[in-house]
Image (cartoon, rainbow, N blue to C red; front, top):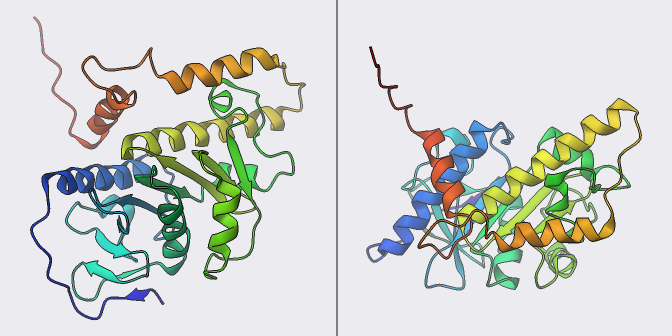
Length: 265
């Protein structure tokens, strides 16, 4: 059973900032589905409602990611009360446990994204964890943290331990034997971090399955690469402070019909 919404709670009109976050969050759900990172009706992406510290948006339990829209997202508070949603909607209780913990502890986390992909779960189940064997993985060099598996995330007392493992600044977490988690200061950042973390896991499994020795990257180059990713300077869109804006704008085109190719005789 999910967290039930008994009656819809009237709310004041949504701000432009909230409408934009809703649009970005719905796009992230659809992009996760587009790239095959969804898991039926499970896993979740949340985003803090702008101007609040205790409310976040999340998917209604039972809706496929490909079908999420800005208006279908549910607004929930840190106590599990649904404060904005359609009658009959509910929320995945495991999603509430994980996302409420992160949003309460990390005010910098506007968006939290969690997946159960084959590659992500596989790497999370390896004792060695994520290895620095490819460029995508080096984005997370010494910047990914781990949380031990405690069963399906239904026990609220797990939140304290999850937050302790996450720490004050990590933006990527591997949930042992479970999956992947990323945090973003924007929806764009959380999605792009997850997209890269997922690809890092896929490459690692491909390398490991080859049986060949891994070409080691020196420690200094690992750290240099991670810092290059963090700066975002090579990707920054002119006039934007968000280093993820350029790629996010391009990714959104995945959700639009392809433009016709001009014909030149």
